[in-house]
Image (cartoon, rainbow, N blue to C red; front, side, top):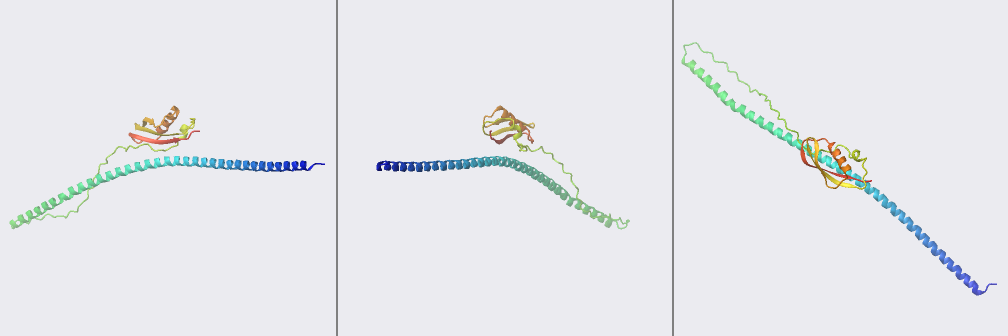
Length: 235
């Protein structure tokens, strides 16, 4: 038979064991919730990182497009300026011709009048002579004489080359350990890229690839001070 003290001790042990089990269960539940929260945070951070990469790629593509459109607008403005100058020169030539042609008309009319009056006076003075037939005066219509305007050949307007191809084929075989963001400064002479320099130190292979990429552009005359911003993401 167990004594009352032994029964009390067993009850205390059961109580301690129950409390221990409850505390252990609560701790395990807390750990599981924390692990789940960390997984959710990691998933959110990973998704955010992917979104940032997509945004960065989109910005880079739009930056190239903006540079290309800016170059096209600049070229078109130069062409419009050249056409405007030609129209002004044509207008000046037409004005000079009209002034020269119409300024001589009063003199021709005056000479014809004087000739007619002279013939009339001679006829009145010699009445016994055979009448002199007056010359038939035909009113002349003004005839517009076309003027052949010389075409002035202008040298082609020089401008910086514009983007027309992708950089990827030139750098796909180059291993890059980090991102590169820089500006390529260069001049154009004899349809070639000269004085090429970069705002950041680049590997020699990457410099050679950028030079080949720039030389693939269509050149438009000799020009200085051209530049091209470039951003390359490393592996």
